[in-house]
Amino acid sequence: MTIGEALRQAGKRLQEAGIETGQAEAIALWGLIDSSAFVDRSANVDSEKLAKFQYFVDRRARREPFSHISGRRMFYKSSFRVTPDVLDPRPDTETLVELALSKPFNRVLDLGTGSGCILISLLIERPEATGVGTDISHKAVLVAGENAARLGMADRLVLPLSDWYDDIGGRFDLIVSNPPYIAAGEMEALQPEVRDYEPRAALTDEADGLTAYRRISSRALQHLKPGGRLLVEIGPTQGAAVSSLFREGGLENVEVHHDLDRRERVVSGVAPSV
Ligand SMILES: C[S@@+](CC[C@H](N)C(=O)[O-])C[C@H]1O[C@@H](n2cnc3c(N)ncnc32)[C@H](O)[C@@H]1O
Image (cartoon, rainbow, N blue to C red; front, side, top):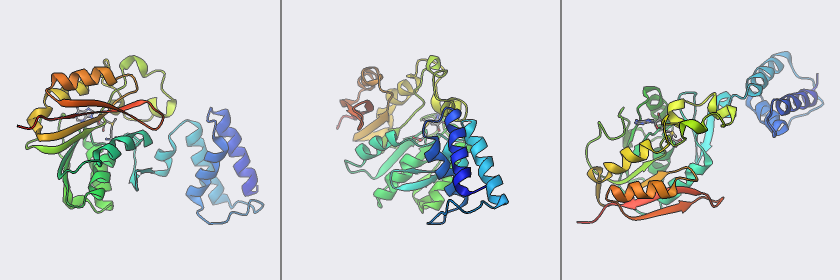
């Protein structure tokens, strides 16, 4: 079988499995086993490469996310290791990173750090800053630690296990979070890649989708310096509800920010200056 035939068959198979971009994904999966700059599609595939390619195609046809097969995901300006123990970083979350970088900060807290993609991206952009990244998942913290080490940030952050703020001391200029915000009733409708392969505790609070925002906003003033900022990612229908929670928590200048698709994506608020 030639490389061209293998790619065509794989693309068709992925499309039949419900992946519209099957042809493109087949080419990307091939790239995981052969990174040559030029691929001669008329050449015969060697049997070892073909077996590996078909193994990857089988996994993707079962709707396993591409990032779980490659083990990597580009986020903001860096490549992060991704495993089934962490949320696959989303381009949508770069809106939160851009907003966080729009003002100065030295100490940053990332609640629910997952792969560490938000915190590490912020620290890379702010060479003077230090950070704390928390997660309730021990396995997630290990992945974040691996990413921090690989991207040269290990000596500028700590990664304690904590249920939101429970084990966190001190005050911060900036608190960021992309918490689980999908309501329990919305889980079934998610794409199989998300519903069946991503950690459930990273996606949903098993309730109305607002539990984490209640916890994070109600204690924000105990952990922010005067004038410090809280920024959280939200689902596209949650702007009004999360803004109310921010105001109840004592935050000022509460604003809803939109992403490039004009969907509500981030809520920000500021701790009163004394
Ligand atoms: C939506 S994921 C975000 C991961 C990463 N920050 C990102 O943006 O890709 C939410 C994260 O919150 C963590 N989490 C869930 N409940 C938590 C809790 N009670 N305390 C701390 N972290 C929690 C999950 O383990 C998960 O890593």
